[in-house]
Each structure stands twice: as structure tokens, then as C-alpha cells.
Image (cartoon, rainbow, N blue to C red; front, side, top):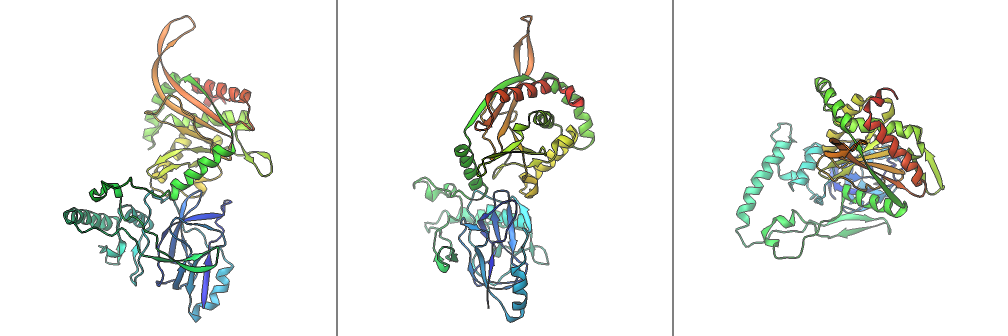
Length: 443
């Protein structure tokens, strides 16, 4: 009998996902709980597993397609032995088995149908996609048959050497991926897709040097950033206020505390002090710790103070969240930030670690600009941009010129719900706390 596994409700108010990578192909015989696809939601990328086994009849869309909750994800031909378990599986919600951020700006290759079952961890599969390695061609060094990162890297290195030899030959390499059977959600019919897909970085190949500019599909995390930025700018009229503050005392306090942090095994940057200072300002001015419900035309004042930290990764910008930041010390925040940054770079953040933010901080870093205009993380209503700290001349009240550590900062806000006056209060209070970091011990 035929069984249709539909995209389950993945929670967090998410109603659709993008297909990043099929882990099975039409004709494959798969087992219960076998990972079948990687999908990208607004929060993270994850693998989904099938609740029953059987033969794959059709896949629910091309790579890059958006699929809604309830749409057919995969169609299977099941045996009589599994038919009794199907009804129970229909009523269950399959969890996301791995809430990883494993997207790539390179479009993944469609799998080729074969009888060989590849044994590889999700991180190894991700590496294989980045290096354009077909896992079915990799010989595992593990006697159990599991392919490791070292196996993939060794294969890619050998392939690169062979590639250099092939470039001497006039025979062109194929750039077309095999056709994949997909399900049309609009018509409920099975159709054939013959879209061509690049198998490598086009710009890196000399034979394409004289052709038109190569194009790269907007996929995965970059697609989410693309859509969220547009939604924020076109939904919320935004304005940005800018100022600078004297961070000399903050520099001194951090230098005195760095040995203690190092002894406890973590790095102390300026950002944990900034996060802690922001929590005090948000408590005093709750309009900034709010979000907008545009459908209901309501402002939602959040009870918790959960500070998102915009974090750059090779795949794009992620925003891990420090939950209940107001209840944590500077050292607690520093430890958690370091852990989240590592997870972000390794694409291992869970949906929970990227959810429920109430206010966002974006840092341009020590090599960044003096001022910037960060974009509000909609539906939040404000975002603080903090910029590099640099030595600059300052004129004191007695006209004496001294060298101080100054820092630029900027506050972007949703002008529909926040006026200029409260923005001034926020910035003055934040400036006061950072210029007198000892207040963090008293507030």
C-alpha cells in the first residue's frame, strides 16, 4: 500500500520549511526512522526521519522548494507487515531529530538512486556537500562502514588532483544533475524535474572564464536572511539614533577581570558588559523589550529579557539568544556567549537557542565602522548596534584635551510604536551605565 508522510508541525509558530537536501532518492528501500531530508526553517536547519519504512515512490519537491506543514513530504510503497503501524504513525508528530544550522550558500546536489546505504553523520554529510563529494564514492576507513570527516577530506583532495589533470583535456564535464521525481502540491500529481544544477563553484573553473557571470541560487540560511530583512524593512518604518560614549572605565574594568575569567576557562570580551547594561535599561524602559502583533494591532510587552546576539558565521548571520539575561552575571553571560558562538560556527544551534528573543544586539567588532544602522529583528521593536572602541582626543569641561577610549553606538527602532523621546532616554541611560561600569554591581 502507498503511504504519504507529510511535513509535521515543527512548532515555534513555523508553518513551512525549505528543502535543503534529499538524503534518499526515488527507488530507494528505506527503513523506519531513517533520515530522509534536511529542511530549513526560519530558526534552524534540521533532518526529518520517516515514521515507516518502504520503497520511495516520489519526493515532495525539488531542492530549494518551500513546503508547508501538512504537504506531502515523501510517498512510500509499504509492505503488508508495516500497514498496521501506519495509522498510528499518522497520528504522531515526528520531531526534528537534529536542530542544526547546516545550511550552505552552495546548492546541494540531488542524490542518485542506488542500492547502497551511506552511513555518515549529519556534519560529515554537510562537509561532503561543501566539498562537492558524492558520499557513495567514498570508501570508509571505519570497519563498520561509517564515513568520517577524514575520509571525505581525503577523497576531495584526491579528486582535486584528478581535476587538475582533467582540465588539460578538452572534454567538458557534465553540469547537469539527474532528474528527480517530485510531487506537485498544487495538482497533487507526480511530475518529473529536469532542472540543471551546478556541481561545483563555476567561477573556480577556467573553462567558464569567458562566459557570463556565474549565478548562485539564494538558498537555505541566506534565503531566510533575505526574506527576514525585506519583511523587517517593508513592515516596520525604522529610524536610527547614534551617539558615542567614553568607554575608558569599561576598558580598565575588563582588563582587571580578564585574569579571573581566564582562570575559569573562558574569554571576557566587552559584549557581556554591554548585554548586562542593556538588561537594566530594558527593565527601566519596557517599550524596548516588546514585539508587535500586526494582525491584532497590539504591542506585546515581554516578561522575560532574552537578548539575541547577532553572530556572523560562514553561512550568514545567526542570532543565538541569552535567555533571562537580566538574571545572569557578566561572567555567566560571557560563558554562555562563548558556547553559543562555537555552536553557531559549527551549525549546531538548536531552535530553542535561537528562539524567544526580545531584544537584539549587533556588534560590528573591533575592525568595524564607527557607526552603523542595524535593521530591527522583526517583530522586535529595537536593536542596539555597538561598534569598535578606539582611542580619540576628548575635550574636557576645563578645555583640557585628553586621550580616552571612545565607542560609537546606534539604536534602530520601529518608529510606529517608539518615538524619539524614549529613544533619548534609552541611549542616555545605556551611556551612563557603560561609562560607569561599577553601576553593574549596584543596580
